[in-house]
Image 1 (cartoon, each protein chain N blue to C red):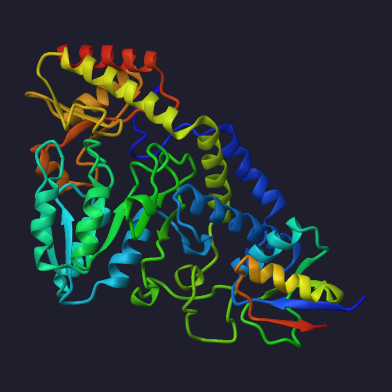
Image 2 (image 1 turned 45 degrees about the horizontal axis):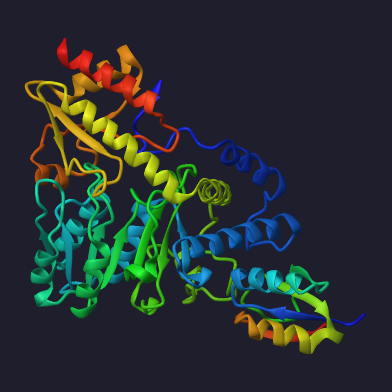
Length: 72
Length: 382
């Protein structure tokens, strides 16, 4: 499975994103931000890259502030 | 033992609060927002959940505008020292705690223009006096929601529009009301709300916070301390976003988890039911004390206009002697003296001797109050 990661500015945003996506039933996981990605925040959210569009639109709809979304 | 010192700190705590303490250390003992392993993430999850619950509790809207501090004093200092610059005008009342008065007096020495509005001797604040004081404009109005000495409730919702019209922000110290009265920052027009975790919110000492309304431009407030936040770790400068801007250093995750348990216990019991219970106790205290000769009750003597804090003095007797005898001979625990609020005691006319303060809490019963009144009567008569 190809994974994607959502990068954040702050831990609080990562927590909010996790809540939103878990509630919607997505298999996601909070992980330490992979070092190959420069990010403000030490925690990133890993997801199934096939669900990229749904993940992005859910986070947008919930006004979760994100730094970037990257493919792993 | 009858504990009547809930205005200093609430005791006992619900068993759920004690369980939350061991639970968080066992299950979520990592450093929140730092390491990214499962114990760290679980701690961050708890911290975020409490942020959400507090935002909802005070109607803040955005959970990221809830900033955790070590206590109310810390949160008040954060705003006062972070916002006010030499030449700024700040307006406060004469019934404030030293958590407000001391930083303001210190800032006054640095060139901040401080105006103290006199309250009446029952602790009440006339809104017309506030309007008069604000006719010269101000950067900030800071008032408590209820006095820690006499319990008198200040008219926050009436003051807010006057403050805003004068171009001032409104900072409210809800140390004595959060958990007893409903505090809705949007409906009341509060820009900056300070709360403490260890009083009526039933958490442990060492946790408090600041709730920042959307009306506040946080770029105007400098952080009180700076340091590690777990975010923007590549930078040597402090982040400018909330809540990280004001939350440097390892947070008190134990305090936060226990505060969460305390708030949920309160919501289960019902804030209105709690206030009704405490009002009933305050009425019983006032009735009982009024019947004892030489006792003078300070404040409004009206539990509809005050939280359940009853302060009294006894003609010709030292408050310290009465407090000690109540404790030693009857197991009735009160707080005597100036309650960290010299300005308030000057206002009610009890400076420098102070008063004996009785502050029942959510676990105090009517029987406790009757026993305490009998004890006070015995001590006063002998």
